[in-house]
Amino acid sequence: QAELVESGGGLVQPGGSLRLSCATPGIAFRLYAMGWYRQSPGKQRELVARFMKDGGTNYADFVQGRFVISKDNLKKAVFLEMNSLKPEDTAVYYCSADGSARGLRTYWGQGTQVTVSS
Image 1: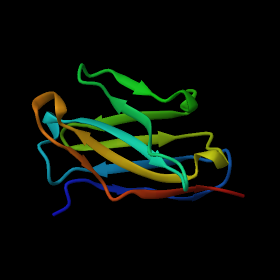
Image 2: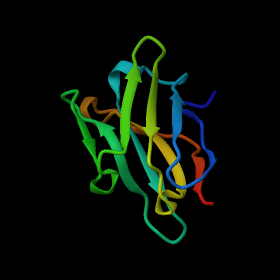
Image 3: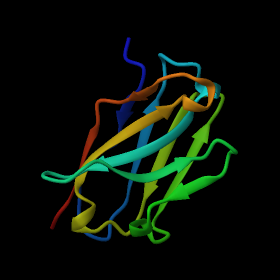
C-alpha cells in the first residue's frame, strides 16, 4: 500500500479555498515530521508548511497567513487549509513525512493538483 495518500486538490477561483488531506496508512505517523510542499511547472519543489521536530510549525513566506497546517494523531492524517488562493498558488501539492530525526527515510505522496483560475 502507498505510504502517503493525498486528496482534496482541484480547480478553484481566485480568492477561494481548498482543504488538502494526507492519509498515512503505510508509516508510523508519530515517528515523522509531516509537511506540505508544492511544485509548479519549470520550478523546483518548495516548502509550503511543515511541522518541526519540536512540534512547532514553519510556513513559507508566500503563505502570508493564508494557509494552516494541522494534523490528527488519532486519524494519522495531516491537512492543509488554504484560503485566499491566488493563481500563483497553482501547483502540484505533495505531502511529506520526514523521519530524519530518528534516522528514518523521508516519504512523499503522489501529489494532488491545485489549480487557481477564473
